Length: 323
Image (tube, rainbow, N blue to C red; front, top):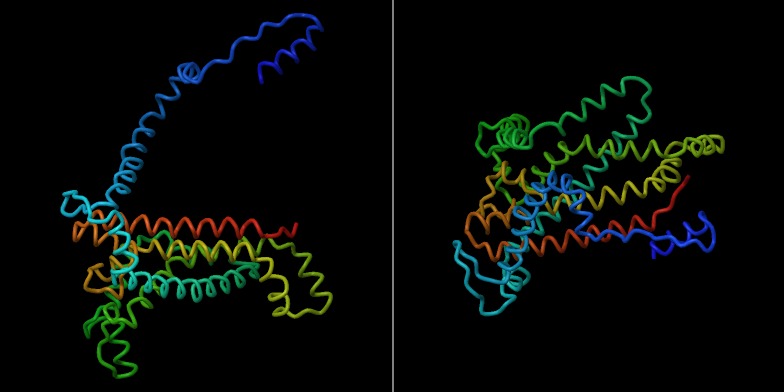
């Protein structure tokens, strides 16, 4: 089609009746050979992608339908046994997803509320904004392993840990095993995660606040609307895209949480009240060497994350612009 159009254009330029001989379009391989030097430069990246990403994913997908224990593959009695075990028979899976649900609710509810409040306060500042931005952004550039190790020491289960010493001084209560008690381990991990993500979340909220036209507030002020009324009627509705982004990213981040529980609790199977889906997959795969079952869990988690991403795209499509 493109060759025909080129002939028509050439005939128009040269004159009607003139015969134009267009060169044949080069094939795909001819174009690759012509740009072979560029393809040679990206060849290592392509090989790395195929060897270290595509092949392991394909192998894990096949292994998820087999009994791949202790580096030995054998067929299962039923093809979907690993998936049936994960969805129906394994209580650790239910505990891990319950833990991550609690973690997500805490980090989204409390963490985002603090971040939005901080963003509103910083957005109203006229001086010293750069200093405060640096102050709350410090946790982001701090190593998660370092932070997790420090908080593990703070919330250690013995009587000499700093938090237990403060608790005993203020209330007289005995030492609490914060990272091993069912009621306290996820809240403690959530507090650390909220502190780590506070800077990033505040920046996202501030970007949303900066995008709201100031004329809306000027008109509302002239009409006599209070600050609280302006927040509910202008700020919060117009922050809808940011709210959707924070919720979806918070759910995905919660599902992928791995580092903090591993560093703070050791990530052992014996502490199931600190188990998260990714930590559970790690334990089944690299502690018990049940690679086939761990692969099935990984693909189930991937399906959940893809579903969350599709919901994000769908919700973004419904957002309205206020330009």
